[in-house]
Image (cartoon, rainbow, N blue to C red):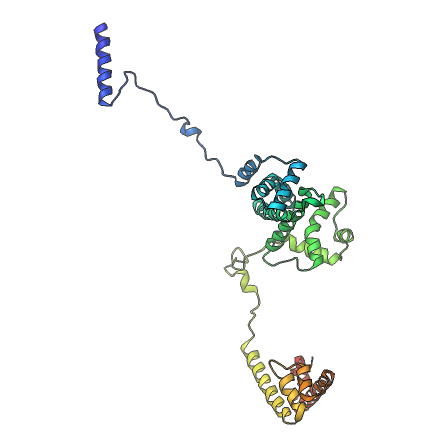
Length: 326
């Protein structure tokens, strides 16, 4: 037995010298995770971001004031970064409130809110006695609202003050009425928001509608796109020809009328009424040593005479050249 053990030990030593150690009992190597247990973990950028910002602790009022003072007095970038990081959760909280009503892309809202937060850090005055988070919330909301207005629809809908008011408050007021047990009818919403009932109806239709690609087919069995239903913006060829003839006739008649004028009236007609870059009333007044008001009176007299003369020269002038009479 001893000889066998010595022989086995020598074989091991010899194999170690050759660099190929082979144990007597084969090792059972198995993967840490069996193939059946493996699964693809979905990547969620929002959750990753929330985990990342969770590591930054909130600041006390004294710490906040100290950092804001360093930013204000010394342009301390390190202090500014601490202020920003400590308030990233505030941006997320505000973004969640907006997200319930206005958009599906929460990360975009957070991104815009972060830009507003940076602006708040740059503009904040620590000597006014206002809490930074309260001040920053206005900047954060402003940037989020601007983003929503710019990206809510392909065709912008917040073009007037009333539309903007409805855009930001209609959905919230509707939920508030439902919570109080009332049916959110347009009349009641209009009374609550102090706007017209038809404006509530119009905004409800706009917010409730979805955008449709003009290249998408307008029926399941149709190949015609929605764009084919739109009217052709181009003017028909016969209308273009008629307009060209009308302009040419008017030009000839105006040149004929010009020959009936002389002196300063002809000058005002040429360099004031018909010129692409007309002279000012003051320039013409200085030329003839008269007041600006007097030049204006002469101009109005010439225009009245033009209309009267053209009505006599061109049949159906009032109907054919209605725009000229305005």
